[in-house]
Amino acid sequence: MADTTTADVMGTWQTEAKEQPAADGSMTYMTMSTTFTEDKQELTVSVYADPERQNKLFEYSSGGPWEQQGPAEGVDGAMAINLTNDYSLATIFVDAPDLWASVSLAECPMTVGEAVDITTCANGPPFIVTNCIDKDIVLVDEGGQRLRYGGGGVDRCVERPVQLSTDVFMRVE
Image (cartoon, helix red, strand yellow):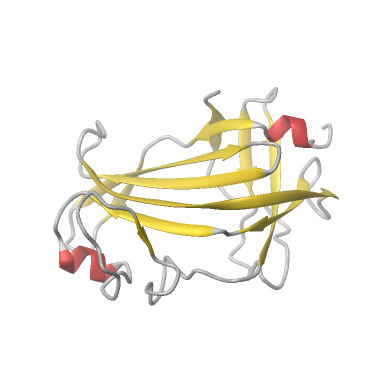
């Protein structure tokens, strides 16, 4: 397998909708997309109330500069990257205070339809916004059509992952 290069990751990538349980026991449907340009990377997580993705509940976006660090150790073909988070924005599309509290946004001034910087108000998972360089890995394979980030639950402020996530992003553009 050839090593992933900067040119390989350029573009927009998206996961298929993944069923996720909500705090109230209902099911939600989540997609993730990521876009790499020459010097910026953005990750967007969208959560919907329906499998057809017609009723958006929530969106989270974060991004900033990124730099390649050469081949990743321990993962054949992967490239080590450093990501810097310049922003972390959340947008709600329904008024559901209990739901937003269940994802640690109770302290944030959430308003339906408005993107809110959650850098200083998120108070726990899944939105623990860090002020560090995010050490990650990325692998592009399947003839340049599939992208995967690092996995394994490591603290990326301290160490780089040495395995791949099960989340699969397919090339959109």
